[in-house]
Image (cartoon, rainbow, N blue to C red; front, side, top):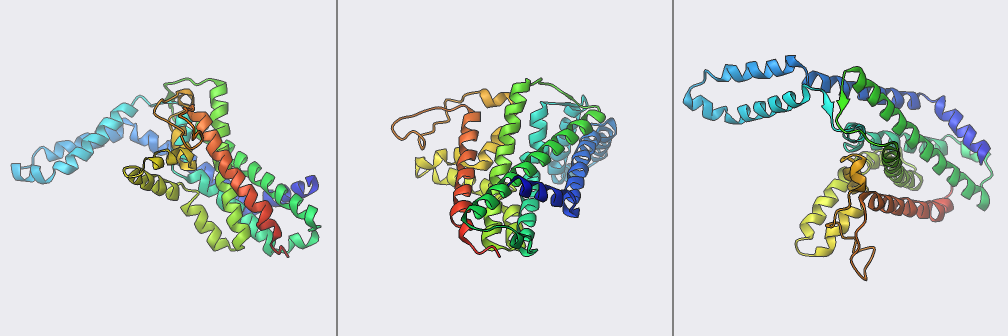
Length: 316
C-alpha cells in the first residue's frame, strides 16, 4: 500500500492538472484580497460619493425612480467606510468566506479527485496491480488516503495564500484566536472537504464517467445542493418539526457554522436540540461536536459504499 501511495503521489505531482488547480487557488486567493483592498480604498469610497452627488440634482419625480439605486449605493458606501480600516473579524472567518462557504475549495478538491480516480481506471494503470480480494481493499483504502492528502494540501495552500495576500494588502484582524481553536477549525474544515471528496469518489467509481463526476462536484460539493435541501427542510419543519434538526446533520450546515470563526465553535446554543441522536430525550451539543459527528457520518457512509459496492465492481 505504501509503494502504491508513493506511486500515486508521484503521478499527481507530475500531472498538469494538479499544478493548474494549485495555480488557480493561488490566483483566486490573491484576487479576492486585491478586490477587498480596492473596496476598502478611499478611491472606491470617493467614487461612490461622487455617484451620490450626481443624483442630488434630480427632480422630485426622478428621485423616486432612482430610490432603489441610491439605497444600494449607500449600502456600498457604508460597507466601504467600515472596511476603510482594513479590519477583518478573524483569520478563520476570513478563510471561511474566501474559499470554504462559497464552495470554491469543495469544487477544486473534489474535481481533482474524480479526475484522478476516473483516469486511473481508464489509463490501464490498475491492470498492473494485484486485484485479489485483499488487493482490492488495499487499493481503495490507499485511494482514500490520497483523497485525504489532497484535501489537506489544498486547504493548507488556500489558507496560507489568503493570509499572505491579505497581510500584504494591509489587512488586520479584530479577534485573535488561540492556536488550539484554529487547529480545531482547520480539522473540521478538512473533514468537511474530505466528506465531500469521499462522496465524489463514490460517484466516480460507480459511474466511471468524468462528466457525471464533475457535475456531481459542482452541484453537491459546492454546497449548492445542500443549501437547497436545508431551505426545503426549514419549510417542511413548519408542518413536521422533525425536520428542524436536519440542517445540523448536513455538511453544508457545518460549513455554515465554520463561517462564524473558530471561537464560535465553543459557544453552546441551547436552541440546537439534537433529538435525532438522542431519541429518548433532548441533548445539546457544542457546534464543533455537531460538525464533527455530522461529517464523520458522511465519511462512514462513503466508506461503506466504497468497500461494499465499489470494491466488487470490475476494475479492469
